[in-house]
Image (tube, rainbow, N blue to C red; front, side):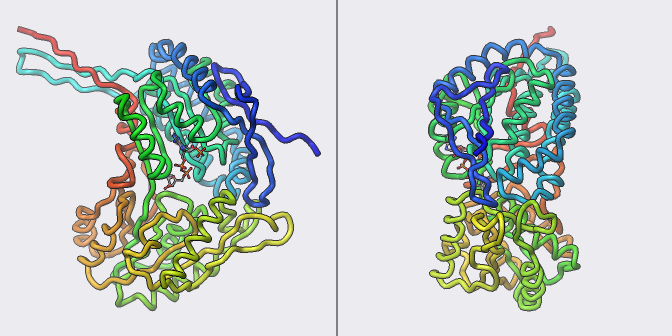
Length: 485
Ligand code: NDP
């Protein structure tokens, strides 16, 4: 058997093995087979990476923004050059269709790098004049060494969403991708060296959360932690970081509602978007609408059209361009999602379509595929409607009027994103103001402008990413007051 590709950490500009000498298996979700090995790093690797970052930080902070931007654009060029290969790698690592990685994940990684490269050259800070008596101005200085910790669902997309603003703002970064999907981050590290990023400016330490993530969060040399992942891990990170007064940005889970009013324009294109909002990336997007609230007067008619579309979704080999859904990311996640479907049945939910694993033939016979599943008959306070499943499972819930829709939508512990489908402009604005979510989409979903604030309320997180919010997070404001008279 040929030896498996073996990933390395990136520390001080060099590819290095983990101090432990231990490696983790990386699985291909579509086949269940191991296809690569990833370092099982520990606190010793984190120490080395933070030390390298500390050495690099002053020089990088003093590098003109134009130069930092040029290097990030060069890195974006290299990612763009490898679009096809990176899309295939992302798909192989995560189970998502190659077509999705090719149209969404990798282009978005390029866009993240370019956006923050440009943004830093356009950024300005404030001045506050005191009627000729004094002048205040604010310096925005990089923090030093920051940690970026990202999850497995949109691997390179979210990894670059964090490291791009951190680097653009002049920080040295120690980043930890999910060890479940480490491959594209590892390749990005190699491309960063090729792009000419100085050694130590970007360090990538692979490994498991409790060993690498926790060590990073607790490390005295790390000034801020930008984390995207589950609410449970977010709470652990907040607890570990609090005694050190570190800056924290936490982008966590969601249980998002899509709210469909009888007056919505339910054109085929809009219905397709509503279906996509539940099932894109196998439902493994924090922004997916897993609770579909539908006004009772159109409930039955809507349900029939919706189900016809969901039933037509093809679950298949991620390499097949005809596949709409690929495999779930891991055996553990497959078990979790199928367990949630069993629980939905146990608490009285009716399965309208899907509801089981999909067994494929050929090379994907041992893959972790689940059929797109639609449930109904569960109250909003059912476990199924309160817990983040993070898979291809949508629960239909009828409502009568606006107040009930609002109460149902707001009736979870999460508050990441809501989408609202209505032709009534007044209602759209009225409800948007009262929805307890960080993001509201009206008659659309996942329409993203990278300048806008991104993040959730309640158990969905703390702080905002995107645009100047990210640049603010990755810098420390210092007010300087000059007396004039
Ligand atoms: P996890 O919280 O399990 O892991 C996220 C990252 O944190 C991984 O790199 C993980 O490493 C690491 N980690 C785990 N434990 C610790 C720890 N104690 N200290 C520091 N780091 C740790 O999330 P998943 O990877 O399962 O991702 C899915 C979750 O991410 C969902 O809840 C989803 O909603 C959320 N998410 C939120 C988004 C948002 O923008 N709000 C966007 C995308 C996803 P390891 O892989 O080794 O466990």
